[in-house]
Image (cartoon, rainbow, N blue to C red; front, top):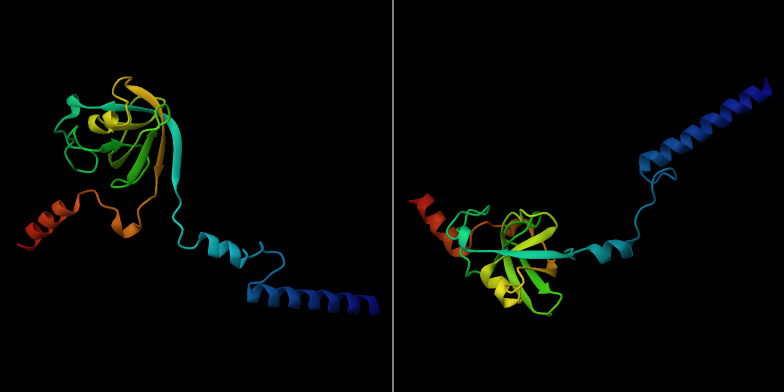
Length: 167
């Protein structure tokens, strides 16, 4: 009988300790909390997107057509189509063969061709020497926008749109 009483007492004590630890949220069974240095390192730092792959350009056939952002495509603007970057993101595209780079605004979805990571407007393609070849290896670097600043329309068009709503 004495061993039964001691065993029940032991189980009760272990249960009490576990419940107290779980109530505080610092259970030895839970995953360890991240160290403060890890939090500081990631706080306020926006992750950069870096991709390397093939790029192509698109031009006259799409001139004046609406893009995914709602804007019209003009081949003389520095714009691009990317499958996943948020619309309105500014990206730096570097031709790996020539080293030339251009900053473009992502305002469309694409490319439609397999194996390509970005489609550039004609003007952007010319700036990095892509026009001659039509396809080349590039590096795409972009910092995603903060949540509040993701826009599909340039600021001057947003102001016009806001004026129309208020009238």
